[in-house]
Image (cartoon, rainbow, N blue to C red; front, side, top):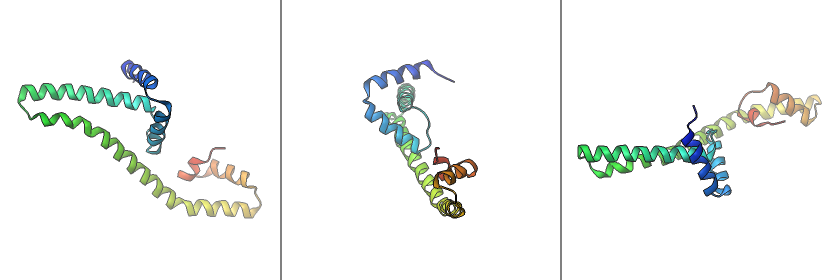
Length: 137
């Protein structure tokens, strides 16, 4: 489901934020398995925080809650950061677990007489795991 406001805000963000900063954010998001454009993630964050702040402002004024509740939507940003870091750690652990098998299989294919390129191509077609996913031929 696509929202026009997210796309429009993402276009504005693309024009305002330097490409270098967006690419750094995009790399960070990709490392955490978030496959959405960085500008769209920023647009969704802006919309979520804005709508949440308005809803909280109304709630605080109607129900006489403390104004300190207005900070709650800002906890989304550290939450996303924490999610990405946890995903990076999981991926690193998966790679550490599968690296010995990957290298053993590559070694045996090279000992059989396959060239490095053919062995890598063969492994990319039939292997499973994070190292096999990274092979692009």
